[in-house]
Amino acid sequence: MEKIINIAVVAHVDAGKSTLVDALLSQNGVFRDNEEVVDCVMDSNDIERERGITIYSKNCSIRYKDYKINIVDTPGHADFSSEVERIMKTVDTVILLVDAAEGPMPQTRFVLKKALEQNLRPILFINKIDKKDARPEAVVDMTFDLFMELNATDEQLDFPICYGTAREGIAELSLDEKGTDISPLLDLVLKQCKPYEGNENDPLQMQVSSLDYDSFIGRLGIGRVTKGKIKNGQTVALARNDGTISSFRISKLFVEEGIKRVEKDEAYYGDIVTFAGCPTISIGDTICDKDHVEPMEPIVIEKPTLSMDFLVNSSPFAGLDKASKFLTNRHIKERLDKELETNVGLEVEELPDSDGYKVSGRGELHLSILLENMRREGYELSVSKPEVLYKEIDGKKCEPFEKVIVNCPSTYSGTIINDLQERKAVLEVVNNDENDYVHLEFSAPTRGLIGYRSAFITNTKGEGIMVRSFEDYKPYVGEINGRKNGVLVSMENGKTLGFSLFNLQERGTLIVGPAEDVYVGMIVGIHNRDNDLNVNPCKNKQLTNTRASGSDEAIALIKPKTFTLEEALEFIADDEYVEVTPSAIRLRKKVLDPDERFRLNRK
Image (tube, rainbow, N blue to C red):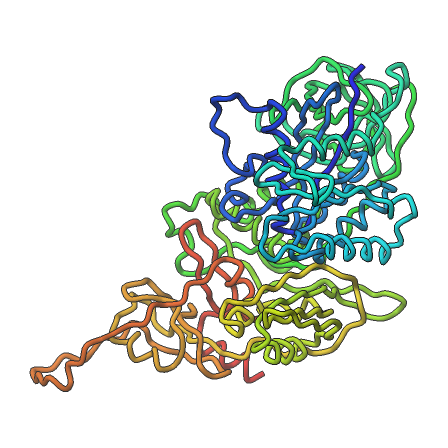
């Protein structure tokens, strides 16, 4: 029997998880000598590569000495924390990466808390010790304090420590020695964890911790075999989360070898397997021997905190984008149903009074990644402003709060504190460092943070860093002032003209350029004042027979502001939509007709 150990690599965003997995794979013979290997090989999704973040947890394996080590690479962003929650039951330990300069960050707390709850003994890897501002000893002390805050046991507090630089593939057990490869970390894993123990003759038991989808063989369940062995073609019992029991036949069985999924006839206790055969499999379901049904404790995934309405595009430009393939309510429903196959942090409800769906997720990034994938696949739709989901706790209305950590030049700290306190945030920590930077920590309602990122970048001149992570539900804090600026709204259909845009520049910041198609009700700029203003961006100069050098001044247009999808979703107000098509992102009013908008506002 193989000696199997399963580990997960967890950390905050940009701490170097995927880079460490690269080093583990490349130094253990997974790639051929002449094989071209890209950075962050586990980040295989297009958006993951473009943005440099991990969105989906993924499995791979290496052979070290006489062990098979299964590795789970997990996301670091708080919006994808459901990917981390469910894999903790499948691993023997976690490698907790902490940046040698930054120290523990908000998501470090979350992933460590989940590991400690499963009684795992983490291994601390202090990464990026080659940074100029690295302070590994201080970061170890900060991490120890975090363990204490999370009520770690004495055994968990005695965590082993490894230092290194994942990019160089180097690990060392102390700062005094000079490492040459990643093997000290792997030796630490073998010392920390015994191989998974069991008996192949025990009745089968495994729990589904992840889902995948294959266009040829359908829905796939992924999980660890906790007892016995599983065979291809075997008829097994399925104990669902709701208590019902059914049976199905396993049609395909795979295990991870390197970064490839390899088909097998059977797999044994301890291994992480992928199987097909049940189109209705769900997270937390238990696969058992058909004659010995023993369900495992269900996996609890935390509920969404934010929702948006995904609606059929009703603008005058609907269907005009040549790349658009899917426009109807049925198309949107089919795509959302497909997403629910694998994205367990998502919830979808049908809207009773319109063609669309209320889609709830763990944050703006979580939902905007789904939207970005949909527009790339040819979907066209309108999306409403993100709204937080409230809860009633002990008879009180509560809303989601986030931990906000800001590092910025001390010159801007007063402005940041004032802005966030206006948004009902509470300042908890202030620290100044020797480089004239200030470290601020806030507890802020998610509602107040929607739309704040662009203001933060402006107020810190791009020199500030802000990280956010879901903290808890706390009592409702009352009304929060929204966007301070109104918008410039087109009152004509047609193409924008340089002459009219030049005159509109005095009124605010334009978000359209010359010769762009616009329609009545489309937002063309950000007003300098707090009210909305109807404008005509298609007006041309009156032609006369008279020519004079003074009147024929040159037109100089300022480059228009362009919104990314996330920025657009953060910017819009309650009475506005983002129109999302494969080729364009437009902002518009919900009610296009200016007279009708005026009547509604008077009411």
